[in-house]
Image (cartoon, rainbow, N blue to C red):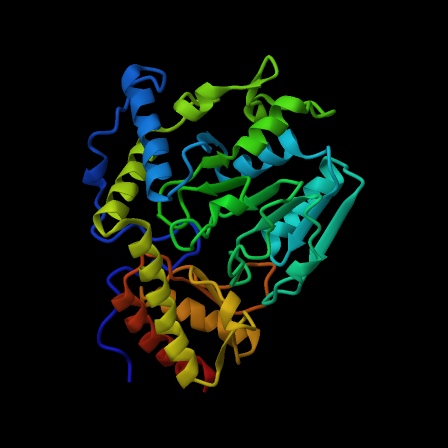
Length: 371
């Protein structure tokens, strides 16, 4: 039978992700539109985003947080182009973004001593093979593979190299062990459902030391430059951005952070995401035609949940199209480079009740196209 009720929000995309429950455009009424981002009000709003980010994510006091251009991609490229080179590099590749970082390290920065530890979609590389005398580059959560790093136990505290982590689909949904992370990046449009084009760069004192003691041999574009006269440009980490940010997008991020605080902060965000995953786990356990792409439960993502489906590719496309036409689920096809299947976002901005209704529609759509 065709389900009688539909999810209140059909947005299950893995980025940009669903806006937080109860969101309205009226929340942006206090955005300082038409004002300079370098005015006292503009800098105050940007500095507030930085302060709230540090507070909610429990980022150590001596770590620095900055708003930088070009989303998570810009933030991570900035990081790599500024700090990589003095040591060999180990890169973990288990989804498309890690693959992209490996490509840039080898073919754009042209570093010679690069060790790529790779795994197929749905699996993790052997973490015990990482050499922490090297700099280590990795994603915490594979947005396109549905696989996450389960914890930070594999990272030693006495490492000689730096750990550079792309955590854009992990922050606010997974526990990040900051003592194991030297630098981390994310973007507003992922876990919090913010607006796009701005990246967040988090760096430890060890990264500051590297920045101030090392000058890369390649030229740096202006939007990548975070030093002045050989020293870290502290103003970037106080709300003075490299280029012009959108004060409207910043206001949207502030409202998402306000919502996160209102439900109980990081602990509540993680709990909501894990409860959302459990809805899908129950559904998969009861249906033999849908399977998690992640092979092991311990490293199954609780944000970007990826599935394979026992359907020919044309029928799977019809299933996805049918759900969109019914205004039940938008943008849930797997990433273009990943195995054909479904990808459903389960971060905290998604309501558990909507996922429960979605499961009813998944069953109906599957039965409809598989006949």
